[in-house]
Image (cartoon, rainbow, N blue to C red):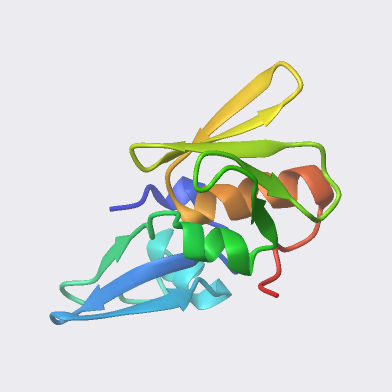
Length: 121
């Protein structure tokens, strides 16, 4: 389950309600409900899970595989690269390394660096 403090409107997550699971983007109503706003009742059995980063998603987000799954470069103009090791992506920029496992983490990092949403091509 995701810590609500990690989420922003627009983050990709996997929602399970009453045993049915689907992928969706977090919206303002989700944030209000998860934050405990008294005007919203959290549905019984609601589970929010992170979506693991995948090579397919990196391609959709305009990364280029430079080394057959071992090194990825972002084509959107920011100096940084990722490497994949056991499902963990390392965002490397200069001397800084940020470990990412989930789509919402990369979305949040991109937003922090650019003040824009990460767009699927």
